[in-house]
Length: 108
Image 1 (spheres, rainbow, N blue to C red):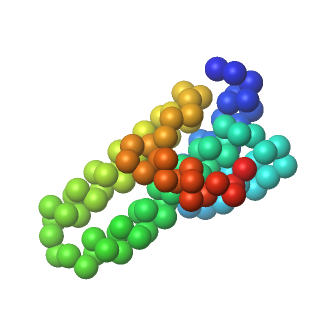
Image 2: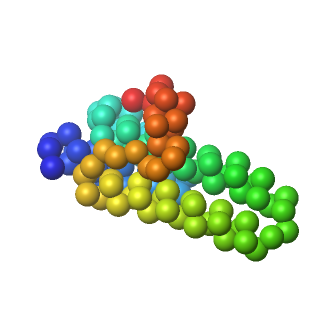
């Protein structure tokens, strides 16, 4: 693990905890502008926004199967992102990670 990821690791992990954690991590990284932390803040923000938007859409349907699929999808994204942050790696979350990096490119 290099020093860039080591220095931004705390902010990267905090970003995945909740949407409030993402906001806290953003301000933690505001002065240092660590690229590792910024990468994970963008990923975490994307996961949280996906949770709220997709969750509102899934709520329209009254189906346990759709609800379970939604939760499994979100947990996989969240768990993958958190584990890569803990391991000090910059890997995009499956399916949407590339989009999150592009959409939130102003976060650095």
